[in-house]
Length: 342
Image (cartoon, rainbow, N blue to C red):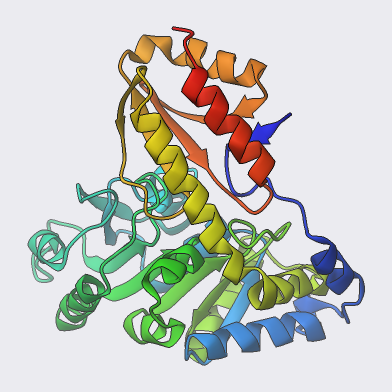
């Protein structure tokens, strides 16, 4: 048996999704003539109360486009030190936009309005970079799937508005956060200037992310996407996968969260585990007592058909997803319970 818990990006399209993809009506999206893409963009924009949306091949490209939209070379953005845009987007913040990051050490990847306020550079002090953008991530990837308190988001929005800063949300796993909190997509749309959303993680699509914002902003984003090489042709096949997922897969996220919580319980009882980050959604991050044993730990589980991701220095990650079956889950729990290899 193979249980791949490296990421929720390892899923395959469901039968219903494949059927929807094959029935897609397509055109050339570079000319904005793909009816399926246009329908997806309209649907998601409406979902968040935004004027427009733009479909992207990747979440990284959507985030990088948003950063370029809100900044000029030499500017500085504020984000948590665990942020995906800082750690896992290939240095694109500096390469693509010529922008530096003012890092904040938050709580599991979540920062507060007070922290943001304290690091905004004075706009008239020309010796320091101009602060123009704040980027949040919800849920937090490196923070272990933690979810923002929406009241704190509103406070950050107020801070940004008072200081003339834009606010972007890396919402790659926002669908997971919404499943936990029950907050509305419209409420999120009111707080952020732009939001990126991923379809290829918890929702199980093969490819695809989207960026929402004002009509003017998305018109500018279209040019930036072109510069980044993100123009796709008959991408309606992918758009239909995303539309199917929105209509049919969101309700299944709670099963991923339940399994992740059960893994947390088992890991806390494992003699080799030093600590487990609090599990809120579908990400489980834990640390070994002795980081030098990481390779042996991973190799042993791999021999058992259980695949994990190393975050380095004895810290490991599991991510539950829709293709992680109850049978696999039972097998993983049994293996971890019986594990006595180090």
